[in-house]
Image 1 (tube, rainbow, N blue to C red):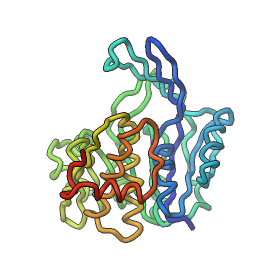
Image 2: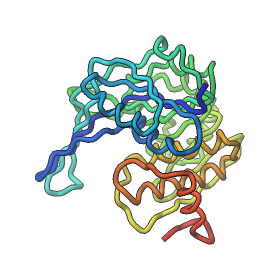
Image 3: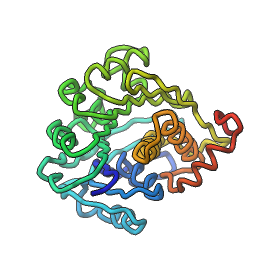
Length: 296
C-alpha cells in the first residue's frame, strides 16, 4: 500500500526552434513524480510508454521512484515548433499511446490516486470507478479536454464528465478548463457546479493570481508565491498538486496544503525542468516573507 500513486503517460516532447531541436521527457506523471520524490511519502508511478523510451523510466528509477510500466506500442510524442518569434507556436501529436485499463490496475493499492491523462482517450471512466472503490481519487482535468485529429491537438468538452466526476474526490483545473467543464466563467460559480456534480474538493489554479479551493461549501483563497526569477513554468500545475496531495495526506487542511503547494510551484518556476527539491526547501521558501504572500 502506497501513500500516493500517480497514473498517467510519460511523453517524449520535441521542441523545435530555428536554431535547435531538443527532445525531453514530459507529461503530468513525469513532473508530478519528480516533484514528489523527496516529499517524505511512499509513492508509486504507473505509466505507459514504448520499450524504446524505457531509458526515461530507468532515469526516474535511479532517483528512487517506484514505477510500474504498462506496455504500450507507442509513447506519446508531442511536438512544439517555434518561429523566430518564440510566442508563435504550433503543436501536434505525432503518435499516441495505448489507454491504461482496469485490468492493468487491479493490483495497485494506494491511499490516494492522482490521475494525469494527457489526452481524452488515455484513462477510461471505468478506471476512475475502479479506483474510487480503492482509495481517494484526485484528477487533473486537462487531458480530458483535448483530443488529437490528424496530429492536431484540439480542445473538446468531456462528454462523460457528469458520470465520472461523482467518483472524483479532488479535481484540479485552471480557470479555462473550469469554464469548458461548467460553461461559466466565474470561478466560484464553476467550482460550486463541480461540487454539485459530486466532486468533494475543487482546486482551481489561477497562475500568477494564486488558486482557489472549495471544500465542504467553504472557499479558501490561496496566494501566489512569486519568485524573483521566472525560468520555466512547464509542470507548475503538476508540482502544485504533488505538494497539495502530500500535505493533505499528512493531515493539513485545504488552506495550509494550498499555501504549501503554491510555494512549491513558485519555487519550481525558478529553474528549468521538473522540481526536484525537498519539503524543507519549500518550507524555507514559504516562510521567507513575513506576510507569506509575495516572495521577491
